[in-house]
Amino acid sequence: MLPISMRFVGAAAASVLAIGCVVSATAQEVAGSATVTARPMSSKLVPVTQVMLDGAAKDAKNWIHSNGNYDQTRFYPGALINATNVGKLKPAFVFQTAVLESMETAPIVVNGVMFLTTSFNHVYAIDATTGEEYWHCKHKLGPIITVCCGNNNRGVAVSEGKLFMGTIDAKLVARDAKTGKQLWETQIAGPEKGYAETMVPAVVE
Image 1 (spheres, helix red, strand yellow):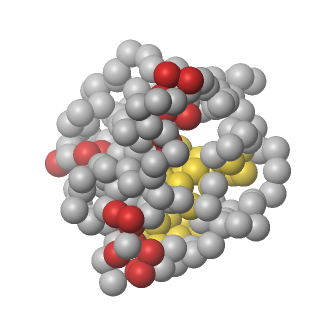
Image 2 (tube, rainbow, N blue to C red):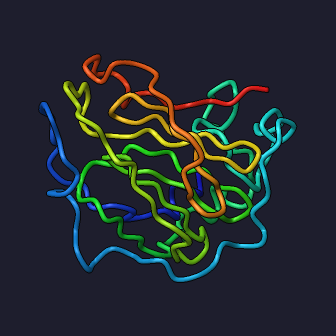
């Protein structure tokens, strides 16, 4: 049972899954209806340490691995939501991304700041309580020869104040978690391989 995902209702409008050769995010982006930057980054955001990553399976406050912990169990240890009150859950907010495409992201949450990605490698930081946006960045894609499973992204890894994302043009990108500023990128495979969009980064030591 994942209250994080329950609260994140209507995060993106799912549309037709685009699978093809060279792709462009431009035609999939909306104008004027996406949530926009509204506030400075929360002072509660802290760098995620290796100790936090190691202990994530028992951390009911945060969700700092895409699958919950290094064992990939997807189990949430919190007890706030249970069999007696689950029926009272209701949407806390609706956040509209700028991309009308499929969304296969497991959001990362650090002290109330949620990081999520969309198809075509857009990255957002939002307030997990109100849905207000802190920042939004999009990776400038190079030519994509082959797309395996749609133009999806599977989320980011977080460590020491950085976010790490695999892209559909087969790059690994690091961004500053507070600002979204790109710190570096590196080519990790040929974009013609067609499997880069299925990867979720993981940080160990």
